Length: 258
Image 1: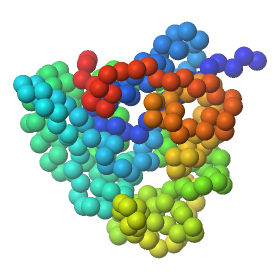
Image 2: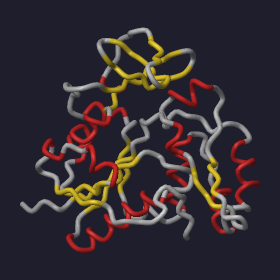
Image 3: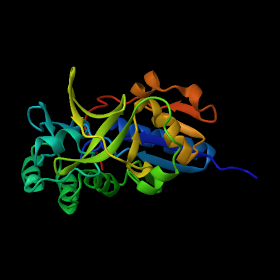
Image 4: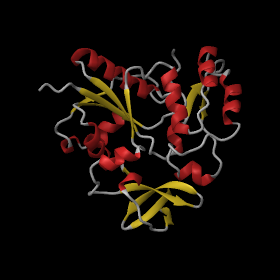
């Protein structure tokens, strides 16, 4: 029986307008699909919690000075430690951002932004990417999906994250040395009280993400970013052919072409 190729790339939500490196991964996957056929899968790592990842970097239309636009948050705990699939879009953020966008992008893109009104940040980003036409024909697999987590291989080596209640929020706590901790930066940590949990709450850390993802998707080819190639242990998944995404200039800047 012939197995069709499964071409995968992974990325956390990376701005309400996607960063250019994500578009480069998508274009690399489409080019490979045109050559070998098969299906493209976007492993959407919406379990991530780092607020820096959703910064949208846009040059000012007149001065060219880059601005960093990002979501706003109800509280510090939500900003720093709540996973993106649970981070709420703060009241008034969308309207304030609409008023700013005329300084940075053309009206067709502003119209798309106006048409999106998702209450959760990960869904807001994903809907923007869809409406920009970037995800046509691509299957989305979310790392936050509890049924997916249930099917995934157990993480037995290294650390992992567990989504647990803490101070009226759900935080993504790192399980380390039989403790739940939130990393404040440097050597500072907040300890979260230990509690029972199930696989439906677990997501991988960076070093275990590849094997965890592959246990669910079973991809034949993986499009890796420049940074990913530096830390991916490709020997863990010999069944995958790794492809480095195509180069793109200003890779961290927002993609604004329709």
